[in-house]
Length: 320
Image (cartoon, rainbow, N blue to C red; front, side, top):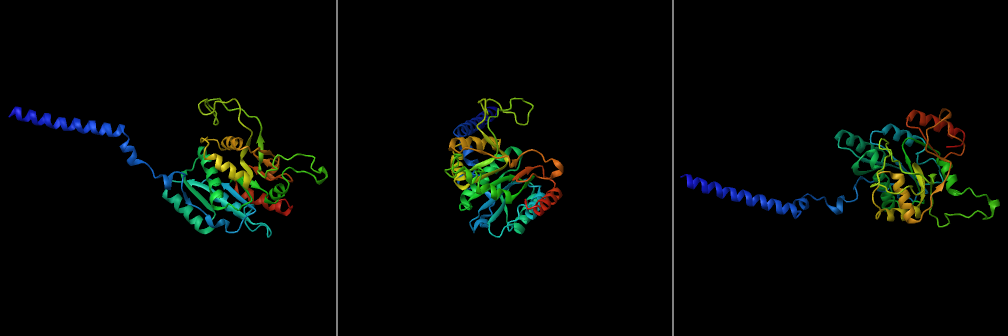
């Protein structure tokens, strides 16, 4: 009996060992990874959960692409009532889009769905909404414009804690180099090809190597001593030709977690030269929140009540 039991035990052990070897071999061959792969056709490019594709039925002069956090509904509502109001100008087709990431909280998503039903101005992609995913959020906006709003002439990307004077922005777009007719062409334009990429430009910044910094970069992430000239990502404007070229180049550019540096790399590869303008302010507001005359964009307006108050005052002055 003991011999029979021993032989049965050995037989079972052989099966267990054989099964283990088979699992190991299949795992090394990648079979289990194949079974768990996500679908390329539907999920590769962070699919749009809310796409707002009807926003550009009429070709816009300008699309405001506002990067917003899921929880910031108050800011979005204030923007809708102020500088993001689409019917602000009777002779200019203006469109407003809020760019969002995804949430794993059903209640939050339910609120977003209701907001979209009410306003129809949300574009939401399937990535976790967090600071270090701002590059994904920005490029989601590029992708949406490329596929769903190709006739737009200009697009402004801006954070939801900014004040924007759309009136001054439209003035800027008519003459971004601020060339006087008296110059008679004496000042050479580096946007003669129509590829405008403008905002507050940092021409020669160095990577942050302090390990305790929020913006620390290792040599593995970025091995070079300086960045290409980059535009502050808080507020910048692009013409359609620049956006199309940069979007196409971005498909062949490695992801970088800081969106302004990523766009600088993409622009450099595309041969697009950033244009500096002091009318775009990335620093916090001063002087009681009153923007300067001629200002296009200013940071520091995360309080919805403040934004509405300042925008109303600027509108009365003819500066909004």
